Length: 165
Image (cartoon, rainbow, N blue to C red; front, top):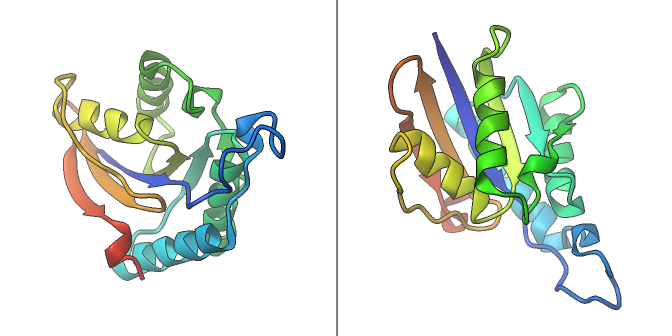
């Protein structure tokens, strides 16, 4: 049995400005951010990746990214995980992801929409089985992993913004 994971970093968002967005979680995607997410989705299609579920950080920029994936693939609404917020500790995200991936109903391809450095820390943790691994994910960039029971994750793709769409 295997599960595929796609980590999708949110697209570019508005500049941090406490006067406009007192809570940084409210910063929206920019038009460029929305376009880059659309390009990332087109790249997933070109790769033959068909998501079956989406989870997302509740932050506006990640949630908007997730909604675009949901709409593009006609999926049920994304599930918000507070464990994916930018300030969330890595161990909480690891626990939530491990619990989800170990559930018997977890089959197919799960898209995880969120932030850096958390997404690449999660990917590195899965690939290196807990040892540090260094990856970099551009805004609207993609990392694809295949998880098989009993072994480390296999890196399927790492796509920077310059290769999107």
